[in-house]
Image 1 (tube, helix red, strand yellow):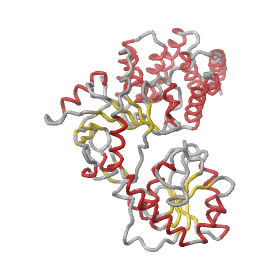
Image 2 (cartoon, one colour):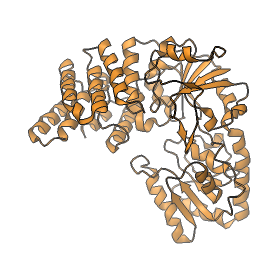
Image 3 (cartoon, helix red, strand yellow):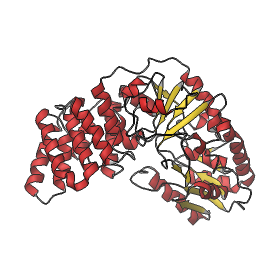
Image 4 (tube, one colour):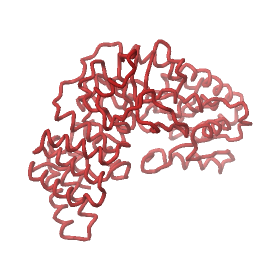
Length: 461
């Protein structure tokens, strides 16, 4: 099987470990810095400005892919014109809880979308034709291993990772409980900003590696901890853990009512703790990405309905929207938004996008142009909400109270809609701002329940 992918898979595993798989990666130079190490792409190509036809022409003559595997479209722009790709296109989606408004419209691009267990029903409801479960994570073998010179395991319970309370809302109070173990005589350490070899060495000092996922998924840390020889302590309600490790034998599960008690039991029984850690370390070798690619290929061998039918206007619009939170520069995003607008100049969604792209490109200097574009969107559709939300956000940044009241009143009037099409479009603020995450979570709830009002109310709040 020959795979073309936008991720240099060496960051997870040696190329030789991918048995019966030949793969090439593509991307811009200097882009893929993973844990402080730059992993080069096989084919230098900028997907934010290039097309599928240009990418295909840049491939070595002796390499014709059987499959295109596109990781994380909320972080990595998609090449234009993917409809011309003659082989299956498979997408891998991860942090949709943070970026759903940007990726919800990408259904035209993928023959198959791979996601976690919790996301399967969500993306099916969003019109993705073929959604399948596959755990995309594994330990990164260059960093996550037992280091011979790491020294003794002098940390009882350790965690190193993102502590942003906006992004990790459910995890934050749990980290307080981990820290509080120190009052009971436990050597508990909670850190952030530790990556690569330093992170692997940190886990080598831990007897227990504490973990908690966001979406009930088997996350990166679920593989990193046992790969470094520590005991994996994972939340009991996790949807996927039992598919990879046997609870009680290769990992230990905890709940809200017994976390502290289980931790103390493990630390009091050193032999049991070490036995489970060793068993988990043995088992994680079966889950290295090179080995699990065989499972992926078996999964993808199942015939599906294929890429859904779509119009050029739908594809160009959704690709441009998905580019907003990526590393693509503002000028490139604006060009993509102009292309979408040219295909549907009277569509409020393209006008709304062009306003956002103008701000993404020109910053405050684009405010006046964005204001005019959003007013055009309001005039084009009497119930369209995202442009009204963006106008209200722009007005809130001024000192004109009358303007603020008028924009707010218009938003509230429109937000009474119960039609999905009236809510279709991204809104300010960009990125992982708390309000942006609130709206992503609200959209997820609305899609799962089939009630657009849950999202409309969040746009007004």
